[in-house]
Structure formats: C-alpha cells, structure tokens
Length: 317
Image (cartoon, rainbow, N blue to C red; front, side, top):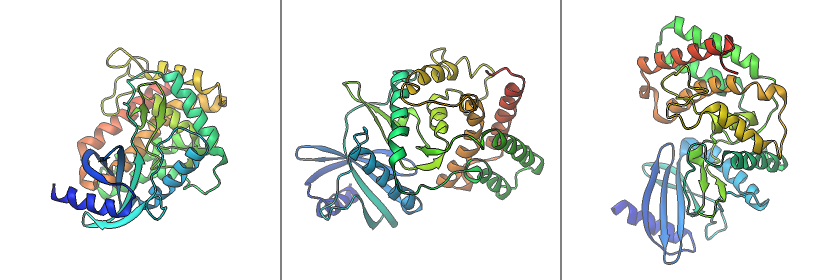
C-alpha cells in the first residue's frame, strides 16, 4: 500500500491526470496495473530494463497503428508530451507506459475466429507502411537460442543433438517463407473483445521482421503445449475446438484481406514445433535458468519427437 501511494504521487507529477487509486492486474515479464482518476480508468505497464528497447519499439508501432485507424489502445502522453517515462523504482530502472483503459474481455476459444482472422490480416496490411526498422527474428531467435540454454543446463548431449537436428530440419522447411511484420505473441490473451463485439489487439512488446504466418500459428494453435496428445491437432482435449478447425475458420476471414502462398499454408505445422523452441528460450529469458529442469526438457523433447513422427507419417494434414 505504501509503494502504491508513492507510485501515485510520482504519476500525478508526471501526467496531467489526478490519479486516485491503482490495483495490480497481471504480473509476468512486465507488471500491469489499473489506475483510476476522478472520472476515468487507465492501464499502466511497468517494464523492466531488460525489455526497454523492445518496449520503445512497440510504442512506436502502437502510435503508428492508432494514427492509421487500427484498433489498438491509445497511449497517454506525459505532461512533456512523451509516450513513456523512465524512472528508478522497484530497485532498478523501469519504463512506465500509460494507456487508455478499454473495458472488455479475452475471447473464448473458437469465438469469432473468422472475424479475428480479418483483424489480423488488416494488422499485417496496415503495418506494411511502417518505416522504422524492426529487429529481425530468424533461426537464432526462433530455434537455436534454446540450444545454448541446454548447454548451460548440462543437459544430456545426445538429447541436445536431437533438439538441434530437428531444429535444422524445421528451419529448412520454413526459412524461405515470406517475411514481414510479426506481432510475435498473438494469442487470445492479447485480444480484447468489447461489449459491442469490437476487437482490439494488445501487447505489441515483441514486434519483429519475421514470418507473418507465425502470428496466425500462435492464434490458431490449440494443441496442449505441455502434454502431447496424438489427437491434439484435430481433436482438442475439451472436444470444443481444435487447431485444424480454428486454422480453417481463421483463414476464411484472413483471406478476405490478404493472400497466403501454398508454401505458407503448408508450413503451419512446422511453425507449431518452432514455437516450442522459441517459447522455451523466452521462458528462461524472463524467469531465469532455474525455472526449467530436466523433467521439463525431457517432456518437451518427447512432445517434439512425437509431433515430428506424426508430421512425417502424414498423420497431420
């Protein structure tokens, strides 16, 4: 409570707003709060120093999108007209960003998926006009970062080689896919559905020049990340929605505004496996080397090898 009062005092000096209260919303790589003033609510992100560069890039992307009429939350500038402020709080330098607060909820699995496909296509089309350079995410970011972590964990070398060999196969399969803007973390949790049915895309913290198809894969992937299910692609664990149906419905909306090559359409399955490599490395980057153990890594390797077997046998189409 004492820290909240201190932060409110800092914010009231930084913005032309009289903030009266704040409450924690979410903790992860960044910390999110809901702020209230006398007549409005706001959304605040506190971003640690490790993510400052990508965060500043994301704010540039958001500003560009809002100026071009794309539905993303509006940034609230400081008294000095800045989109963010750097302060020394929480024992280290942090970045504070304030947004308008939009009332809404995360969509349910499978809800409005065709409409979401339209929205993502519009995002990919709008961002083509963005002029600033984006960090390029290729094989190192997507597939080989985890290999260095495995070495640091002194993981079994024969198993590291299995990760490496399949990673090389995956890269050969996807390396020539069309490149462009990628949100990088476009799951349902980063969508907001208002009471009127309008959608907003949130959390542009990992913008990159990569594969736009990667965004589609993350949005449509309903396989269980932790436990392999041989029917997990076509039959979800709750029987409601699955990756295949979600992907097909999503594409009905996406293709209204943007075309995909045959190579892209057929690479969805490979990118699901790529996601396992990339996400493992990202988890360690956020939470540290000790957040994963041998059991976790063995489980991931098992998942990947079974997925590879299904793909190679043509059981996933």
